[in-house]
Structures are given as C-alpha cells and as structure tokens.
Amino acid sequence: MPSFAPIAAFTEALRRRAAQALLPTNWGTGELQRLDADVRERSFFSARVARTDLLEEFADRVDRVLQPSAQVRADGSPFTQGLDLASARMELKDALQAAGYQPDPEDRGTLKDLSSNRRLDLILKTNVEQAQGYGQFAQAQTEEALDLFPCWELFRAEGRNVPRDWAARWTAAAAAVGDGDAAEVFASAGRMIARKDSPIWAQLSRFGTPYPPFDFNSGMWTRDVDRETAVALGVIGDLAVITPQFRPFDLQLAA
Amino acid sequence: MKVIQQDLATVPLAELVSRATPERAARVVAPAANRAFREHFFRLNQERPNRLGGKRTNFFGQAAKSTGATADGGNVVVNIAHVGIRQRVEGGIIRPTGGRKFLTIPAIAEAYGTRAREHPFLHAVFSPGGRVSGALVETEHTAVSFTQGRGRQKGTTVTKRGEDRGGKVWFWLVNSVKQPPDPTVLPSADTVRAAAVTALDTWFNLKAARAAAPAI
Image (tube, rainbow over all chains, first blue to last red; front, side, top):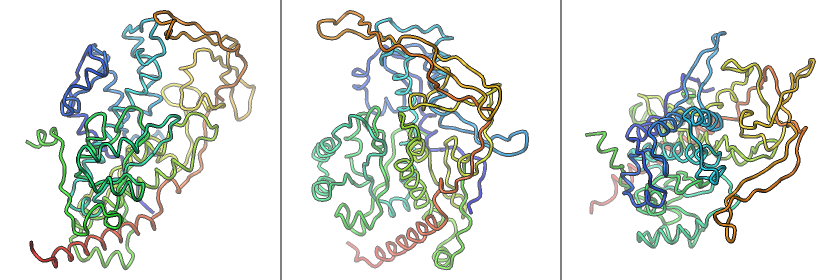
C-alpha cells in the first residue's frame, strides 16, 4: 500500500510560470501570434487585456490551481486544499466585478467578454495546461526517461463536439519538418508517434512549443511510448539515443 | 497528493534494483511509475463520465496532467498536484468550508461543473429535516440572450427570447457528504511494480546492448 505524504508541487510546471512576466497588451490573438514562441512562452498575457491588475488576478488563480497545498483539519486529519477550475472562474468573476470591469454590451457572453465563462475557462485552462504540458516535457528529458520512453504519441484525451482534423495537421507537420519516420508510422499504423527530439512537436503547435496543449481548447495530449513499441513500429532503431531538449528559458534559469 | 511507493520488495524487482545504485534505480523507475499513474488516470477519464451526463469536467484527465514523478534518493515520488484525488482514495466526510453552511450537489446535468453563485436565477428552499437540507431552485424567469448580429444583421444586437423557466431543482443543499474510500482511483501496487520491473529490465538490456555494439 503506498504511503501518502504532504503534497509537493509540480516543480517543473511551476518553473515555467516563474519564468513568465506579465505582458499587458492591446493586441489581439492574431497579432500576438506573430511574436516569437520564446517570447510568448515567457509572457503571461491574454488578448486585448491591457490592465496589469486583471492579469495579476488571472495569474494568481492559475498559480493556485497548479499548486494545491497540504492542510490539517481540526480533528488532525490531513487534506489537500486548492483551487479547481470552476472555483477559480467564480473567484475571477468576483475580482472582475470588484475591479469595475464591464464588457461592451455587444460583447457580453462572448469570448471578448473577460467575465464570460467561455473567456475565463479559456484563460485558465490554457495557462494551467501549458504549465502542466511543459512539466511533463521537462521531466521526460532525463537520460533514463529518454532511454525507456523515446517517443510520444499524440492522442485524444478529451472528447470534443467538433474535433479538429489532427490527422491532417500531423501529416502536414511531418512533411514540413521532414520527419519521414513519423509520417510513415502514421500512414502504416494510423498512430501519431514521433521521437521526443523531433521538431514535429513544435511544428504541430499553434503556440510553437513542443508540448501540449497544441491549440486552444484542445482535447489532445501526449503519452509516453516505450522503446520496444517505438522500435517495432520503426520510429527509431533499437539502440537510438534521443537528444534531451530544453526551452530557452530553461537555459536562462540555469545560468 | 504525494505517493511514495515503498512496498516493492518482490524478488525479481529486488534483484534488478541490486544491480544499480539505489539512486540510479530510482531514476530508472520514476518515469515508468509516472507513466503508470498517468495512463491509469487517462483510462479512468474515459471510463467514468459524470453521472448526470452533463458537460464533462474531465476530472481524471486533469489529474493525469497534474501528475509527475521524480527520484528522491533511492525513493520514487509520484506527485499528483490536483485537488480531490486524496479524498477519493481515502474517502471520508466532506463538509462546507469558507464560512458556508451547505454543500451544493448538482441535481441536473446543466449544473455540473458550475458553482451555484454563477446562476443568479436560483433561490433556496429548505426542508424541515432529513438528509437533504434544501435545494436551489430556478426562480420563474424567461431565458433571454443577446448576441452580435451576423450577415445582414451585422452591427446590431440580436435579442432572442428563450423558454419560460422555473421550479427546476439545480442543486441539492446538504450539510455534509460521506464518500466511501476508492482505492481503484490509483493504479494497483502490482501495476506499478510491473512497470518498475519492465523499466529496469529494459534499461539494463539497453545498456548491455550499447556496450556490446561495435564502435562506429
């Protein structure tokens, strides 16, 4: 039976958040997309949110979702305290109201309305998952992890009413970066598998980052593929060495 | 929640571990344990949709994404930075916090994944006794939506009158909830142990194969 200990933080996920600076901006999504992926990765922003106080509220709730803490009840029993996404959304609505935020009447309830469920869920889910995706990516870069699980598979973790055409995106990304092995495995086995050091992962991503999520509100995620399976499918040779990957802010933090 | 897997003392695993330093063995086992937990949570996410059939919160999918594993000396630590997992594993009584008197339990699919305060059209009715203290019920109202006009209506605000509503119970109000323990929320010790054995076996074989391979 496993023993439970007071919760520790997902250190690597929090490392990405720690590297981010608030970026108040009047730019929309399309304009922000033109920034370098590295700049976007090191910035906490939301389209057309120019108020620093609002960004601070959003960032605070993202951090609290990522970092539950161990507490003790009056009877001495331990429990985990933290923020779930629905409660975070509720707190942000209260904060926006307290800050005097009012959407334009024609935007009410839409993505342009910062207080709408759609917008708040998008802000929270995107930022929480980007931190978690990076955390998974970072933990996968040890020599032992890369030897055991040299590849990732892109798979559907959550259903969507209108799923994107990830098969087409995968094929296009494989062609764009010249990952013939990934293209071949998909053509022959129907599985979206590639080496962890393949540039296909960043190419696939709307955000230019080699870890999930790869687009807004995406239900796709990555899972480890063991060496035996990767060799059997022809993605790698049996003695292949996978090169560990680092993000620019990793190297700056280490300096 | 942090899970420390100490009970791995089977003969095959002990034999494998003895071939490396404890620290190296832990570094080999950590990614395998991580994968075992994540895959378990992703599988639960597929197998356990919410009972009311409402919009999914993907609770176990979130737990999978919150899971990481590291080597801590000779131990492997699997960390699940997600609220609610420990409660589900250990069970126990859940009581309201933050000065609130009641827990709100979704009664319909539309309530699932939301907070009661997000629905201003609800009012509370209370029962004289019993397990349920009361309910949050829809006040009579007409659903109205305002959207941006499209096409020929672009630039205008389009008002749509929806259905007349009222009386539906959205949330039950209770003083507490007792959850039974559910150890199946976590992968079994056998599953994690098997992952550890496979990982160490694979790793040792790979090292031997690379050492034996002719230099290029």
